[in-house]
Image (cartoon, rainbow, N blue to C red; front, top):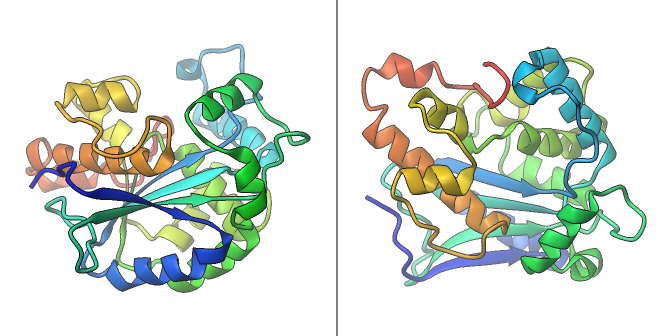
Length: 270
């Protein structure tokens, strides 16, 4: 079943309604056990003169760590679905995805890429409102650990080019800078997110499909059905659409090929 645009609502989560919204998430994770997420952060401030395709996995991880350790999360988008593309309704005519807004980032004094910040503002992200009403990442870490996460949650986690997405969440969840090695990072990923982790970009690459989220969605004849481009609630939904279509149409058999993509985070190996 394809995800249609009818009555899809992006639920905005702030400091004042965090507990209520996490309660809603907890209520439906058994019925909707696939979780796609996306993050928004203040760009990339450290780069390497060597093309990413020529960097070793150790170098790629070190570059990601350097950026994540120095920057702060702005938003987290979350979509929950079953294998048929159904989204939570809570008995209403609408279907829901989530957008968590954080207060940690101060655009006046925190490190950032200025072009990225300008672009985010043009996309409608109100950084001043985030600072006043947003979620403290320390509170978020405590609550989501209690309500959602853990290797026994049974959730399948999906990202698109997700190494930075996991990086920011692991930084928040541990309250520390990322570990020095990719091996240690993967151990933490298993601890918080279990072993059912897929990267839609890595899956698409197996089929010869390259490019960003919008380009790969277009290659698969998928349309954005909710929210604005570069808003993470909408991005998480589009990530889910890509994953479900790839899983249904390109990876139904043999099962071992699909299973081999677990934990294969683009651009790092599994």
